[in-house]
Figure 1 (tube, one colour):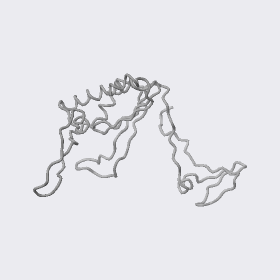
Figure 2: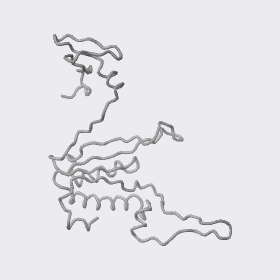
Figure 3: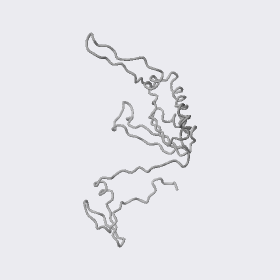
Figure 4: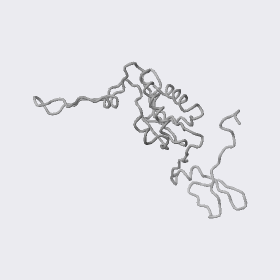
Length: 202
């Protein structure tokens, strides 16, 4: 990564990384080819780069893993433009460790959001609640970071269920029956509570 600095320092607007999760797993493999006497193991000697890419094992445990991530986050910060953003995919094993490192390198105020990504259906693991989510940590290098509001199309059924009121031209309104059509000069809207979702905060 360090080789990118000479050409791209301060020029990158967005970086998404999916680093190792410090699982202790070795993702390299060998595979049997052929049958009976003719079968043999397919494999080759790995380069240092390949060993790091396919193995989530660290000689000195979590400390060596965190040292590796610290150096990479430092390079990433130098690569980002002043309005650049960083998204880091991680899980519960290293979430808290990586966030502290990111707070130190980018500053606590650079933390924008922690996005929870549900990766599997609800279940229980032996002796505990099921591990069904991963985390994406969202950091920005500067205050003027680029934000594109995500939008998604709603189905007709979702619109009818959510936007179930209509305002008439005289200001009065009615609740719509399922599938009810309204005149073009009526305004269809969604009922939203005025109660604060965060009581005690202003």
